Image 1 (cartoon, rainbow, N blue to C red):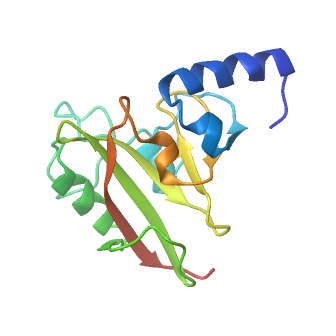
Image 2: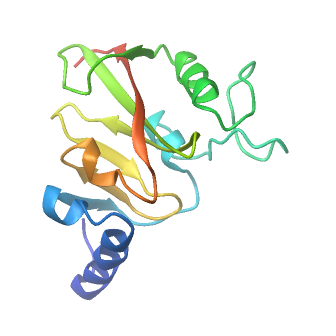
Length: 155
């Protein structure tokens, strides 16, 4: 990612405060912060809309999917994009995967697997990162991966 080294160092310090495992597992910044989209939209491969099941209809949410912060609603939202729950986060030829993180029974984050087997995440309204595995974001901020889903793709 292009940018000032002092700025990148500052951003990395902030990210590692929220996600200390990333420092040892490995990650890199891939784009600057923006409020144009969030992690759910990024996992859905959209970068111009904020996805969230808010009850006030302020954010995009797929039609006919309950507007509730539940794992079931997030699964249904990604099923509208042809994803289905699967057993493993390991890379599979011909499939794209996403992982839904949950903390205190509420979805907190969604990551998308890249064709190289690494994962990409949008950290709220902050930066996008590429991380080596899903464990790097598990912890006090996002909780644990509760569901991995996959869909057929052309990779």
